[in-house]
Image (cartoon, rainbow, N blue to C red; front, side, top):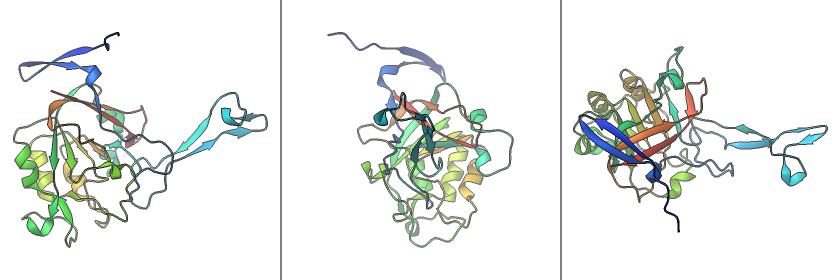
Length: 257
């Protein structure tokens, strides 16, 4: 039996040489199957495909066409893994392709269990009752040093996240102090498995987004991080299409060290 091919990449980070085995890549994105089973957020419709048809052509091999040709309709921010930039909240010329790194970036993957905001000393810029939040102390316990990117997995964690309706079952979000601490660590790329770092109904303020983008470059939301992937330091690639928008569907790839 042939051995699986290995592509080794060497990276020097803070004076230490690391070797990445690219055959061990860990995909942290959700697959969009266009089967009406994607997660939805902020009253979004499901992604859908439309077959291209004309007088003498149908873009469906199953219906006798010569090839498959589809039009995809996708709410990028609300139905799957995506990466956004400051253009999401401000009128700027730069787009996501201007902020998203092309190579490997040092990253740390952590797991936290959100807590009731009433059991923390943290605050939020909009009214809260008994919301579950990712507080400063939860991040502080896991990350002490500056690092370019942070990946946050929340508990409980199961494949229900692949099709969750977050309007019926609201997701945890970050406190103001948690984002402040993330900025203190000079984290430029924040990746999370929740639909937003802000509460869905914060009166349109998106306060955490505004706070993070004072220093940060990208936020990736609606990741799916399988339980088999351990918390660790590693290197990250954020793969996106070359779209001139504030956001793009993305495929974060993590290489654990």
